[in-house]
Image: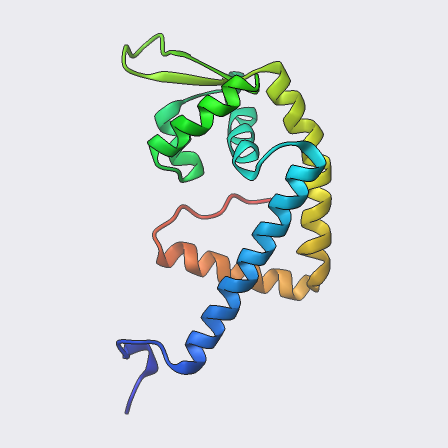
Length: 160
């Protein structure tokens, strides 16, 4: 008896499902990013950084921790933070408890830009994602996401 889960490569049908999933997710991500940029002047990267900072105590996170929170390489984050700092959205300062560490702080302008960008961004999430699915389908997406996160050894997604 053959078990498809033990094949070394995906079946043609599995590859079709995978490709449809990836292509759809990329289009969704691109459309959300485009809307965010046009409606708030924030890139999706700016939004990720500011979300993590505004959720942190004192709107401050150590740079190395921030990289882990948003899943970026440190060099990518450093370059992006430089651009955000020039725009006045964040500032960086040496950690008081670690001579080699850098704290990243959302400025008042950054927190304000994040709040202003959140309303249209969340509206776009509803229009492009939530409204396309029934409540039962949303539950299925949650179940599928949880299974993938477990399989990939990621922390469980935070509860609503």
